[in-house]
Image (tube, rainbow, N blue to C red; front, side, top):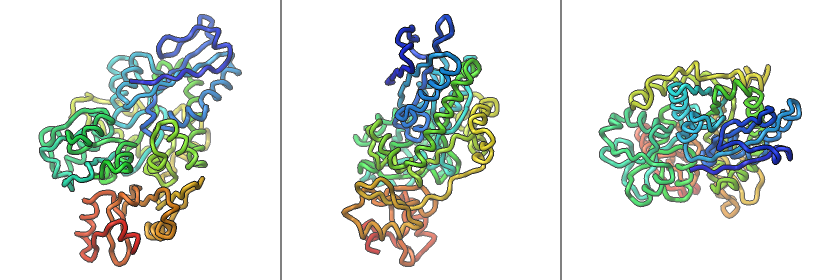
Length: 448
């Protein structure tokens, strides 16, 4: 189910016929173009191509400027979806022109477009994580499950064909389990899966941002598996219908300029950006910031980095084995010509820039900026000294670097130093390798 938002860009638009549902519409004299954008408001590492971009009005401003150059009136229709699959269905039906989705759905988008002779192109990236931490497997807080191997015979909810499903498949295989035979996979939308987990009709939930963080923040789930343990990049990107891009390259470039503006805003005003996205989506700002903040799980950068393209190629066999695609021409799908034009000479320099390691972060109540710390211990000292003022604190996993809520992390003290982990399995593996380390509660970690 989608939500549509029509944004007129000029008063003249009111006098011209509106497009039919979705897709580019041009009046007989070629003076009107309607651009339909499919996005996922709650998949918050796509915000620079969706929620945040729309709230800033950046695309409409870019098209307004373009219209003054070429005499065309542009309108934007925004369609909001829960996952990437319906966006692909609408794109291949000619009803969505530009969409954003995760890496596995992007491959399905490419495969379906080719099969139906409505090819699409990957034109930019929104957010990425080089280790794969955008996807997480969670269980309910009181679950006895401690590791993936204990999922044998259990019911696991995910959205088949999604990036989270890909993480689940790979993680189970590495753990020595057959994803098709050793678990009972439930194909559910994220919200349905969250309800199933709460009701006990699913033993675990494998999902993409922001569901794992949201459920953990609400005290409705705990992390069982950190996708970063795979150490394989995950990302979300922007895809455009090839025929639309060929007819309206200036529109695609305008969208990417707007995305670059939204990316810059997110970096320069991280707290304000988190608050904006929270207001638009109904998600807690603390959850948005976990993923989108300056030390967040997602790094925002529109450039099509070789490591991400290589990871996309590694995803193809996983989808092929699940019989979701036959093959995908990744090189033919990736088209950086539009984003290169937007960045100009600065593109190659930005292309080579990668995310720095995450630092600990503390957000005080009423503050319009957060405080960053080099170590979790420093962050803990600040929290302990300002308990009543702390809105939320984040710390990176000791091994994977995945940022997590400090009060939801699993803590270990080793040599007098408190070390956080996203999962109990991660903490147990560390203790096994460091006999002097011992498990402690968050309160004990603060006291230490």
